[in-house]
Image (cartoon, rainbow, N blue to C red; front, side):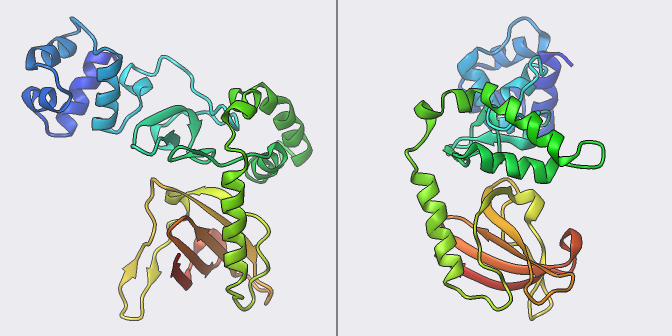
Length: 255
């Protein structure tokens, strides 16, 4: 699909006239018209405004000419919903949501990231040993790890994670093992629906937000696991069965 078709389709999908879109991105209606006929294309600054207005990446606006991959973990960024965002909501097309969230890099230890990737990628056709060897070869070639000294936050995020871990362990949840680490988790994949005492069902997370969390087997045995999710504002503890079935909220605590 061409740039002109993409802009027109997005404008119509959002129910905007050419005049309305022009006002929102601070151009004239004639400029929007010329984009949609293919006479001209938006400049870089206007593309940023269109990206934020339509909640799509600039790469998508341009017809996806680049094959994006996360410059921290190597994940293909083939869909906008997995691309990271800055704290102001603009896309950062260099990273996935798991590795960069709201202006913060979530991994400072390459071996820790490799362990997470192994857990997600290993299968009978791509066994753990091969995944680990592949990631050890790939990660050092990516921009984040090559520029780590320049991009790192001098351990501030790691200190925040450690503080969260201490707070969670201090809750002494019966049957829940001690939390040793927290990984980046995107809300869409962990936003379970809990039944309240009054029978209503509720979700507590934002699908687009990246949280810190982990899954732990219950010390009581059986099929239920503990799920831990947290950020600067809250700590959530729940239990559930495989694939997140039959979740029960154990604790929701504001920090």
